[in-house]
Length: 278
Image 1 (spheres, one colour):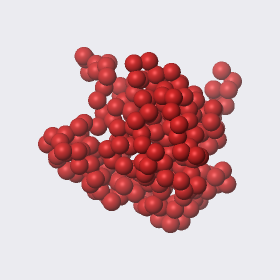
Image 2 (cartoon, helix red, strand yellow):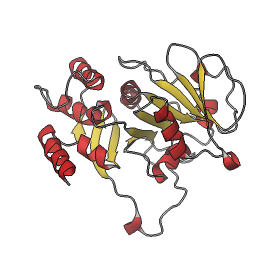
Image 3 (cartoon, one colour):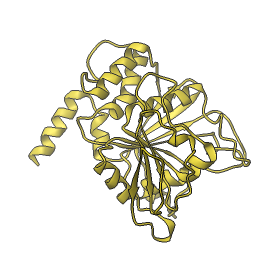
Image 4 (cartoon, rainbow, N blue to C red):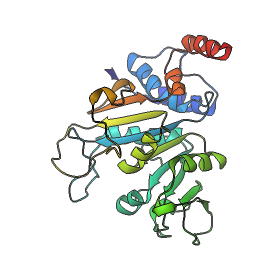
């Protein structure tokens, strides 16, 4: 397990990686700072193309909230800061309409330095009210992905897609958002939204942040729509484990680009060259 230390100087380096003015591999850093570069560098990089990352915070028993719906303190302070850092490194943050309605999130960057990402709500039937906090104008792009034909506040962009049975296809969502110039995306919630992208094979990375508490009942984090019958058929991603204060982050690489991004620079160059030749 790698203990992460996000010092001001290493975060400045990570933001420079995001802007394309620095790399995540050179320089002298402490082991904790190097772990921070290894965790956030693959998300910050833009040279390998767009990344689709999902992040979910849960308890030791796999819950994301209590039975009454209280999800406020599932992640510890460092776990929350981790989520805000991820927001600062992507072009857009995606949530489902149930999360937007229940949690009333702002999806802004507040616990670290960095720009606010575009805020994207998947709302097949057009249920999101115009006054939702996620639609508050603050200079960041606001996007609604929907199958409904209705008006929205000035400045809110709308991606209309077919929604048979009130469902939107994750692949069409991703293609549409990329067509709007939103490359690197964070699928933040809820669990069913993340599962939809995961089971469609559209995630490059999945980060599961586990906090040291036992809730006992309530909604689970990831609930598969098509569970396996045998463990040998289960998805076993290449995983690195990081300690962020009291929270533990499992960083899972799900696609070839994600695996390349996690390699040291010299190894990436060799692998990229071999891939190009083949």
